[in-house]
Length: 94
Image (cartoon, rainbow, N blue to C red; front, side):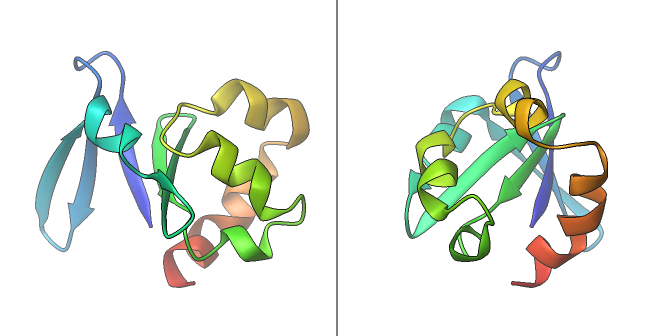
């Protein structure tokens, strides 16, 4: 699922759950770096890619290596801007 991360707000990540908001620190995002619990930060969004990892066209190892990190620079090296738009909703529903 997509969370929102704003580095200007002292490394806090925000997720919108229904009508409420929950805030995570960057330290919390960093904990999600395992095969059964993997989040990545891309372009200000935090993505839970746990279920998506096995479907990732480049392989799940790449996502697992980036788990718990801001992967924006690496993401941009290999993906065009259309990729997040294409997979955003799909990632939420895996």
